[in-house]
Image (cartoon, rainbow, N blue to C red; front, side, top):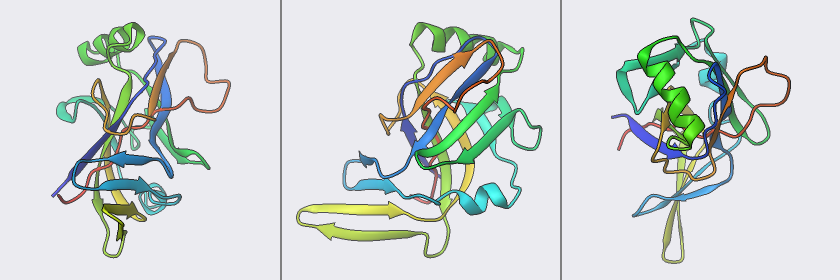
Length: 175
């Protein structure tokens, strides 16, 4: 089963969105447990050449870009899963640029499956903690309701000239 995680702070310039879809070592309270993404959790997905999609609100028919089409670029750095997304000239792409610019959509989510041995559970006092160590990334999603508040999105109209801006969005696994 695919899990979905969300995070916040998206920005757009009408042509390109940048940010972090996931932030490493940041705790998210998911109700019955706290979840933490560890450095390297996405490495196999990024190195394996999988076609990872960018979507609007996890809707398959709201495709914004793909790694295969080179309209979505993903990379891990010391902070987290950074992305750059060239927005399509479609209804979803244009609408999203406006919503990000207004601040209505400011976060990211991601869909993933945990690989065998890819997570670790620990009871810390009364708190159950799950560490994500190795996940199969399926998608990142731009959303107005992120689970991880540290994710960000920024809209840019000029060519990318600096490091990715925060954007967290993509954590899916078996629930």
